[in-house]
Each structure stands twice: as structure tokens, then as C-alpha cells.
Image 1 (cartoon, one colour):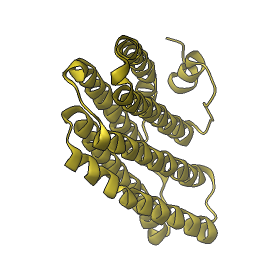
Image 2 (cartoon, helix red, strand yellow):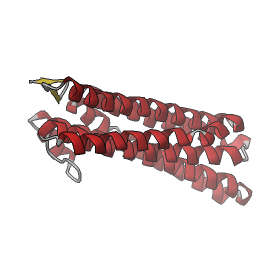
Image 3 (cartoon, one colour):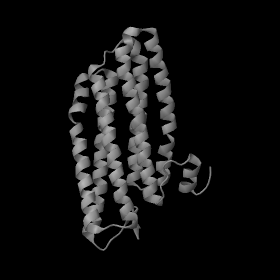
Amino acid sequence: MDIDGISHHISRQYNEELEEVRNKVLQMGGLVEQQLANAVKALEEDDAELAEAVVMTDYKINAMEVDIDEECVQILARRHPAASDLRLIMTVIKTITDLERIGDEAERIGRMAMKLDKTEKLNSTLAAIGHMGNHVRVMVHDALDAFARTDAESALKVWREDKRVDKEYEGIMRQLMTFMMEDARSIPAILDLLWSVRSLERIGDRATNICEYVMYLVKGKDVRHTSIEHMELEILGKKE
């Protein structure tokens, strides 16, 4: 019998170990979300102090990844999980890797914010970057929520959002390139923003990765490198 997508075991301790790992992933995800929100806010509002805090606390995310990974290794060694339990452990290991990389991207944005030479001309672009940053943060949050609820359909909905993020990314990149051509003096600041926007686009990709792991956890099928139609067929059981 399955409870929340995890097999219920006679061993109470085994159940607790699996639940603890899941909870730690969500705690790590919450910290990553906050780091991302702070990094984007620091960039948009030219807040060097907040940006420095983002950079200085990245080690917490790294430490959580190491801790969770070690717990997963211990479960694999002691419990020899199979079926849905093994899928859960593999999903956790992959998810924390992507969360750690999202943390790295947030740190990179923080570093860009620390040295950004903001000008009035960039205000509209910074607002667009803030909107894109919130969009990818929500994607990360919703992907983790799908993981918490083992909800493949919700994961698929989040996965679809990446196309919208890509369009935002392309629009901002065009605007920044235009600014560079119009004013060569703006190039250093524009380059910092280009790297920041690129980091946000990568975070969107990481969120979709987590969604794919959730689909694998629930359905037992690897949906990476497949078309949206195929993914919908696997998850929903029919073409839309």
C-alpha cells in the first residue's frame, strides 16, 4: 500500500528515514527559493548588502546537499531499496544536485548585483529581469510542491512554463543588446545583466529537471529528451 507515493513498510524506522529525506529536500528547496528571491531583489533594487548576504550564505545550501546525499547513500547501503523506494532515493539525489546548482546561479546573480553600475536607462530592463526572476522562483517552488505531493500532473504544468521563461529571456537579451549598440559606455553594466539573465534562464531549466524527476518518481518512466506530446501521453494518458 502506498502513502504519498512512498511504500509503507513494516519497519517504522525505514519509513521515518524516507520521510526525513523528503523533508530535508523541501527544507533545502525553501532555502534555495529564499536565496533566489534575495538575489533578484538585490539586483533589481541595487542592494549591495543583500547581494553580499546571498553570496556569503551559499555554503548553507552546499552543506545541505552533502548531508542529504550522505543520508541517501546510507539508505542505499542499509536498506537496498527497490521499486518506488529506489525511485524516490534516485529522485532525491538528482533533485538536490539541481537545487545546489540553482543556489550557485543565485550566488552568481548576487555577485553581479554587488558590482552593478546601475543607470536610469536600465530601470525598465531591471523591472523585466525582476519579473523573470519571480517567474523562475515560482517554477522552483511549484516543482518542489509537485515533489512533496508526488503529483506528476502538477509537475507537467510547471514544465510547460519553461517556454514562457525562454520568451522572457529572449526579449530581455534583445533589449540589452540594443542598449550596448547604442551606448558603448554601458557595456560593463550590460554584461553583468546578461550573465544574470542567463543564470535565471538556467534556473528555469533546473526547475524543469526537477519536474522530470517527479514524473519519473510517480510513473516510473524517464521522460527526459521527449516531446511535450509524449510527456502528456505518459502523464495524462491521452493527448490534449
